[in-house]
Length: 123
Image (cartoon, rainbow, N blue to C red; front, side, top):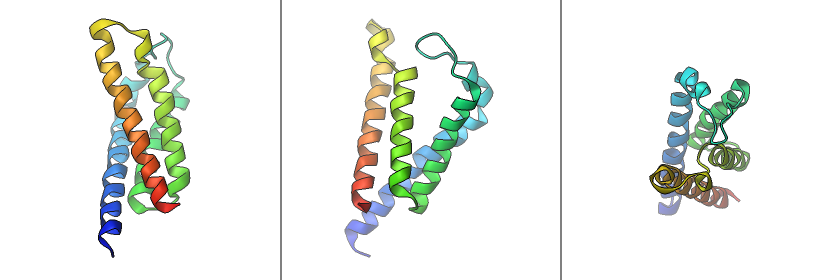
């Protein structure tokens, strides 16, 4: 295997591990997660939240295994966009309250960009 292929595989596995761990943690703490309100003050219905966490878990596993990469990347990017809009909308906050939302928004944008690089590697 060429060096580039080895590095891409390692990166994809690490990336997948991030989402796998996040999905497992979110599902293990589902009771706590479903009690949290969105930035808009309403709770996301539990079944919809569960679907998001399953997307994280299965998406991470698919990235690790290198299967269904393009549909997986698309699903994870959709998850990131929705999670950011619902839970980290930095435009709803001011001052110090905005700081964690700005940080998490930048993290999610970076994750989405990395997923695009993973998709570019298989396309």
